[in-house]
Length: 266
Image (cartoon, rainbow, N blue to C red):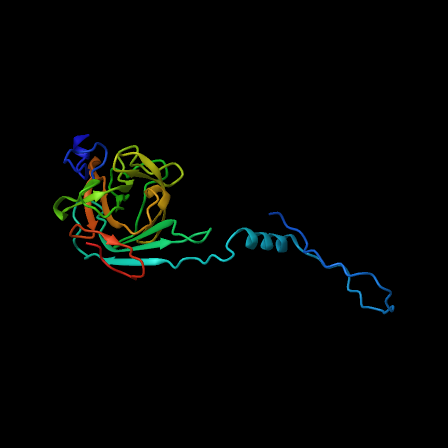
């Protein structure tokens, strides 16, 4: 197990096993005092019909977002140099990282952090319920978050000759080697804290050479999403975890800042 525990370490430098790193009513009408009126003929068009969809729309507006605007998505971007990847078999070379702080319903606060990782080649993930294959064709990855932006606390992500990044408070762990690092049966990946406790799940999607990982901020200790972000990629060619690339490289972090469209953290 020590052979597979060289990527994510405790700040003490000791290797951590398993990770190479109201209800609706009609409005009341005002009752007017009765008085005789002259009879007149009016046009009758039949009863007014209100569809179920109409009611549903009214309910949605009443319950949801009256007076609360959706916060704008805050985006940051970092470009990583091509050709700096290492390792055997299928090499995952990171070209770009894009982070987005997103405000979903109910509006009023950021609740998710999307991280888009763009590679030089198409991405293949292991099937749900399994880890990366021993042939090296399927991606092994870790996505780290330094939520307190303090490198002196948290885990250390080691990227071999590419350097190391300290201070990871939470990690989306997808490097394999069994639980908690394998892909879950529902297709998601575990999120762990720096005590290796599972705090939630991140969803993933793949489109060509782009992997998008969406992590609820509740799984990051209720963080506001302004966090340093680091990516580790590799494969299991030959039955052991091989580092391919880390980004930012050299080791550092992309941060999503309020009101800043893009930028590096450190």
